[in-house]
Length: 308
Ligand SMILES: [Zn+2]
Image (cartoon, rainbow, N blue to C red; front, side, top):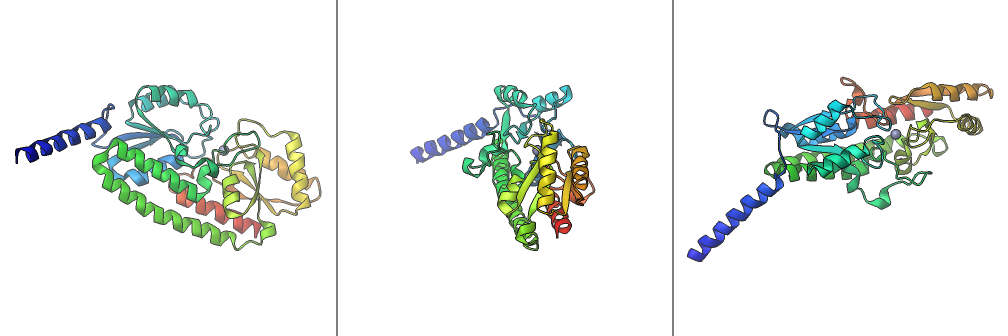
């Protein structure tokens, strides 16, 4: 009997020790909610869905903001320093913020890189030998990202493990449905018409997952400008393949795509601007594209309707 009591005590003590361990980092709850900072709109959306009512999510970048070029302000840095957890994409998406994450990480804060949960063999290597960071356009990879967020939230707050797990599982079903929706819309388009030309190379994961040939006027980062050679080459390609539409992106100035359209016209061929795609940021609040699911649907609808 005494022995049992002793074991029970040990179990209780170690349980307290364990839960204490998970929360050894300084926690600054706001209105009883964990205070989480996410970089992009896609990640903020994901954390809100998995975290539900237990978290307060602050996104650094708003709709239409280009993460490749985004520089953190002093206010952003202090938001991150005061957060319970910081979540970012990685793979150089937040190209000007790498050092900041490193510094905050050194500070023993929970810093989560969602791309760390994606199997390397599923990552696309771009022409400049870097991993392509635009993982969210393969809906199946975004499921992996959701798992990283769920695991991070449980590490921060294991008391609510069940809530996070339930939210995650419900979202998995929605993402599976989304994946099927994209495939069914793509099926409407004859294979030889599945060519997607946009402002920058954000859609390679979309292309490889759903069977599109993809060309971006700028590379995988918008940090490098498109040259006149790129415009000429792509204009020839459009004429040769009689492509009916090209697309602007909400987070990239449209002037390059318009220059491409003019170059095509100069070759006596008409290509229309098929609409605006949401590439590196979700749409504005109050629009269909304000969520990740809405953005993916809006994009595939815009693409298929314009190319059909
Ligand atoms: Zn991009």
